[in-house]
Amino acid sequence: MKPNLKIEIAGVKFKNPVMVASGTFGYGEEFENLIDLNALGGIVTKTITMEERQGHPPPRTCETAAGMLNAIGLANVGIERFIDEKIPFLKKLNTKIIVNVAGSSFDEYVEICRRLEKAGGFDMLEINLSCPNVDEGGMAFGVDPKATEKVIRDISKVSSRPIIAKLSPNVTSIADIARAAKGGGAAVVSLINTLVGMAIDIETGFPRLSYTTGGLSGPAIKPVGIAMVYKVSQAVDIPIIGIGGISSWEDAVEYHLAGATGIQIGTANFIEPDVTMKIIKGLSGYLKSKKINSLKEIIGKVRT
Image (cartoon, rainbow, N blue to C red; front, side):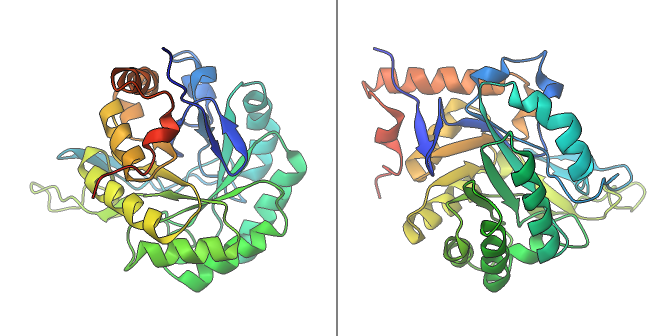
């Protein structure tokens, strides 16, 4: 018996549910010599902005108990270099490519997506409405249901590909934001992005990040992510991609039971570059041990 790990999200067929989260896997080529990229369900690229960004000065990351803080500041090559230098490599891969996009205004989000639509070479868009460590854009769009709905609606007018709205946990009701994203035309929601956090060096008295605060990720946030996936699954009837502290196949199973169709692996890639391969193998082994034929059979099947 070989369990079926295939899933379909908004009409896009994935060979398995395991993707790599934006900002933790570069543009894919950085991991080319470490794992079989074609074995992944999908690659979510580093966030792309209109202009090239250098990001915040170091220190930009620090470890915390059961997690890490980061304030990279959306460092990336910008839309033109991404199209010219990164898409040709990504197009050669036999996996789904999802481009993560951020803007500092409604028009900027739309223009980036318009250029990507023209360039092609990818399968879905993930709209970053939730970055907690930039001064403009990012989370500002994801904490306001009206702004969330508008930006997704504006982008949907220029994109023929399914749109994933990446949501922030730093809101009063993530279910309300998910409803707004669906209302604007999002075909999928992904959650959660990082939680706002801060660490202080007690010898110097300075914050440990140059940006003062940053985004908390890693195993520490897994219970928050699972709870929010479950809440959103009760609020909207579109697919959910679960993110947050997944570092083993057991973590992945929890997210699927909570309602996630797909999953993204983030911080764990820094610790164990081949963790995604182990999770794919582990998911198959779990289903086989339970005599379950297809992954689809466990999605949303938490017993409450």
